[in-house]
Image (tube, rainbow, N blue to C red; front, side, top):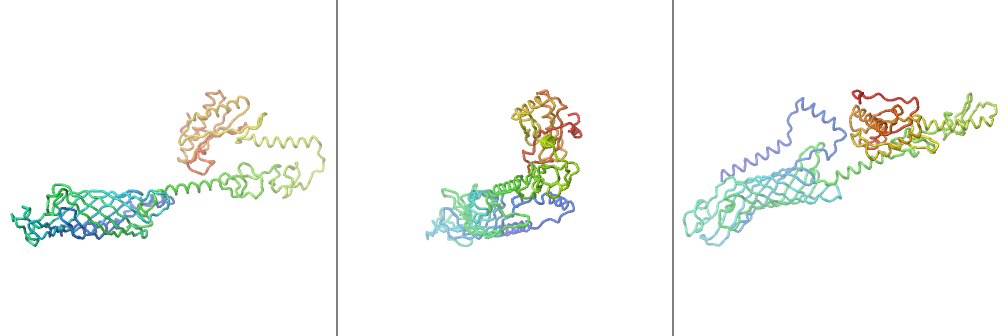
Length: 514
């Protein structure tokens, strides 16, 4: 028994030392400080609770102990300590150390047939734990944690039992009359290491982020040739089973600024709900129209347009007569000043040239106005082309992530572009490639170049469009339509009108031969 008590004391000291080491970091070296600083800067602004490591749960438990065996059990006692670490919202691992004193007495009153024992049990067990009540979508923090666990470990137990007429050896003499249970006259099972399987269940109640209290039950099933000797008697139908039940006082250790609460206390669906909320917020930001001009702020080049002002497709106020006064303030929005005339702040000519306008001049002004409007539409970088049959809006082609190969679904679109150019032999088109913001700038420049080049090659090779009629340009990740890093809308090739002064961009460095 002295050896057993020494082993118990040593185990408790080891567990206490492990707890102390858990909260005592090593002094950082200069290299580790630099590394931590680099990692901290890289993650600054993106670290959230779900990205942080979790705190370690440490629990202590007083137990009621009993043995399921060949002898009627009587009340025992014990205690335990455990460490629990969450792996995710459902699974965790747990290490337990348990001491239990169990006893039993059949109380027959006949020494030759009576059975009585006292057992000291000491064990260490590793458990896999599963949370049973974290499968619902509602709520974020769980105030109750219901769990089951299974595992295996090792144990030491020592037993004193009453000798009777049916027991031989293990300290018992051949005595048909039996021996009373008293010091020095009992049989003994010496302490030695054995293995066991273990199972348990429990329920914990969350008090706050640092503390919870619970009730739990554990059962230890011994293995090996001494599985039926925990009570000292080996003539039963089944092995002896050690049981403990009690309350647990549990503490979460760790810095709350850098460590999150164990995940079995948080809803498994909370990350999904957070992602949906973030996506909704980004959609709201991308579609917000602060000045209510019909153009989203993401592409609005004049986000503070006054109420009622007429704007173009990029949110810029219109000035139809090009007199420097926007239409919404111009009292004569369609009356362009002639050479030598001056307009005031309201767009009204203040120094008119008195020569009356002839009918031909009026018609010329109308024609010029129409032609100017058409020229603005047909200028470089416009996606609209005016033809005798009406206005045509040039399409866009979209590409997969990191891809520059033309999709089969876009072949019909390119065939339509080719027919348009065949019907208009003087037409030139700018073919401009773009990317999203996933890669670095140099990579995105080359990728946008390859996308535009592949489109041009397709038109030249398949439809015999003259190469000089196609102006290759590329912008990499610039001029994004949607302010999201991985948006498919940004991975595109645009077709734009290209007049005589449209210039082709030189190939990126290293791709001149492609």
